[in-house]
Length: 52
Image 1 (tube, rainbow, N blue to C red):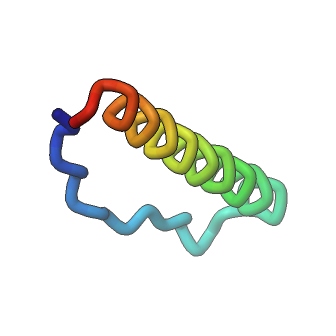
Image 2 (cartoon, rainbow, N blue to C red):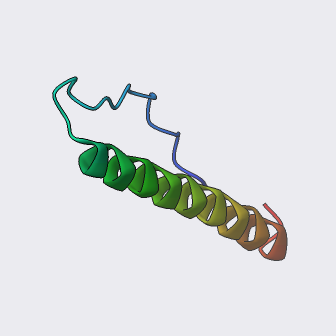
């Protein structure tokens, strides 16, 4: 059984952040989005294999 997804929360960068910090933030968000997508794919595959 897949646990319920957490409620989305806004993740924001402070307005005083530098361009470098903003780029790092964007890369981090991209990594998290790819990871979430992969976890969802693996969960679906697992449920399909186990007939749930």
